[in-house]
Length: 406
Image 1: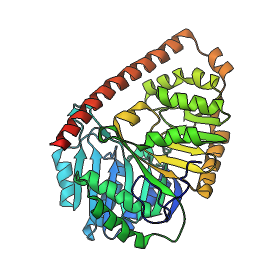
Image 2: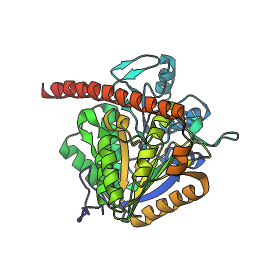
Image 3: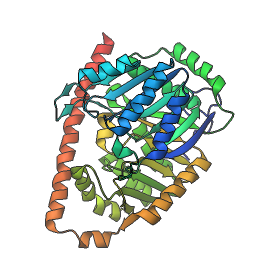
């Protein structure tokens, strides 16, 4: 389906599949943070943690203490946070991190105020330990993503992987943190050296990134490949599902070609305007033959898709134009049938037990004119904001290109 006919058996150039990997699906909440703390505790050389939101609550403090303990035993600890998403801290907070051995940097947009941010967002959610194991998904560092006694976590997913792909992710994180791109020879030497630690296992994985300013759109391409290559069925679990026109066209063509498409959307959302805009598309989706479900128990924050029980993509990428054109995103594509079957089974259980189906007849019968107007206004407002961001980021890309040519 989506797998190259000849997946390289040696260390691959980033963007292609590597095969000597092991992977495991990790649910958000307590399982995610248990895995995160275990990785930090086991690291011996280096830890990279990059995330959009890192709050100074009980979960954030727990992770800081674990990172500080790793630094105290000689591990090089690198922490990169988005300055807007993480609500930039006062100087004394970053000074405390430095005093405890944590190397820290903000990723800052071009223009930022206390309420608004203009420019790219660093939307990664990735942890890499010793360039040998990694944790990639949609989970931020705060209490709302953790299971607390009186508050279950938002639904989210990540993958824990070991092997060649962890070395690639180490390079991604190192280049992001240092703001320096490694040369091809240096990259090849590191990847070849780390291949010695790869497990004797077969699991094709590739690193996918979106950073439109840097002309990286591989996650978007993965979704187009999924719609073009799927034969039987596709399931997309997306917290903020608002695909652009080109992706909607690809989805419509896949559905018309007999591919069963199932969307698991949020029943409860933390961004009201995004949910209203998403619901404006419900009638169109249902008329195209897409099956639509809303997840009910908690807020849905996941970004996970599965095709034909053969292929999975998971990471930070939301299926909307903000992720496509504005944010710096990181996903993993996993072309392993046993793993994809496990993911498909999890999604089937969630649909059966925790989702409310949305049918065209019921949806249109229960919408009054005022609800439809609000949803249309939300859709148009977000669409206009995406157009604004598109041209703003396009200008940023031109400036970036001019600087590279100097």
